[in-house]
Length: 79
Image (cartoon, rainbow, N blue to C red):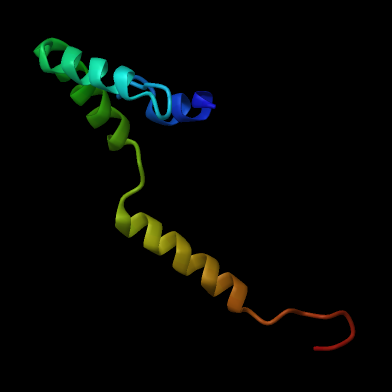
């Protein structure tokens, strides 16, 4: 459901039910008419994104996992 999505976006988005075009239209129109709310959402999004890993951090992590997986396995009695 939308619980996981709400956990992901936090307070940085207006969520509407999937496939509900009238709800989406209403949310967009409300945001168009409310610069304060748009600013709140933008600020929340920036704060949330500031805590995410950078692309460089992600690449370094993936490469470290590959390095670990590339190490030969030690089998008892066979070294």
